[in-house]
Amino acid sequence: MAGPRRPLEAPDRSLDGLPRLRCPPLVPPLRVVLVEPEIPPNVGNAARLCAATGSSLHVVGPVSFRMDDRALRRAGLDYWPLVDVRVHDGFDAFLASLPAGSPPPLLFSARAPRSYLRAPWAPGGSLVFGKESTGLPAELLCRFADRVRGIPMAGFVRSLNLANAAAVILFEALRALGALEPASLDAPAAGPLQLSPDPEFG
Image 1: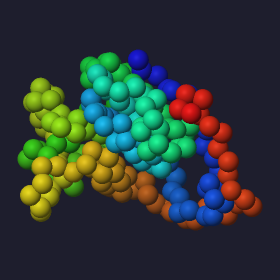
Image 2 (image 1 turned 120 degrees about the vertical axis):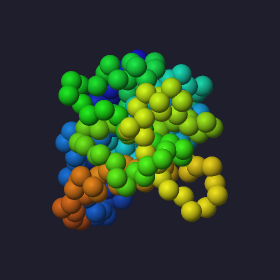
Image 3 (image 1 turned 135 degrees about the horizontal axis):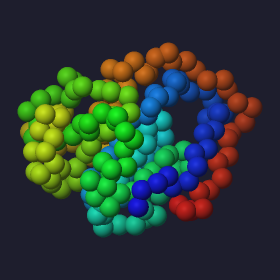
């Protein structure tokens, strides 16, 4: 079912009170879309990535684990309250949830013929990644054939880890859109920030 998991609560300082390099959030934010992910920690790592970038996380089912899985919670640490997480029954349901005028999704595959470095990035865009074992379904790759990109690899591996690939793509999109500048250290705090536990994720 689509919809925000809970209202976002953005703290104004780092957990340990020390300054961090920050940049303004992109408006409208990018969407990280995981289609049928199989490994809970990858979803948790993607959630932390989205918290760090102001992006939303969309999980497209079916998935074989609960969204309150312990390994998923652990990978996301205590950043879950900072992430807009939405769950969709299928890819068409995800597409139907997009606001009018949203750019067409960009799909990423190890079998793509074109590099992500020349992707047509756009604010509010959707960055779509497939399951760990087999990637995106052939039907989606054919349906959006002109929107499929990949990460070139020099080594002979099948693919990158899902969360790693999402990080590479997301930060390149933000860089290309000029969303990582201006960057500056935020003000140090008097003491460490204490986040209240998320009631849904423990």
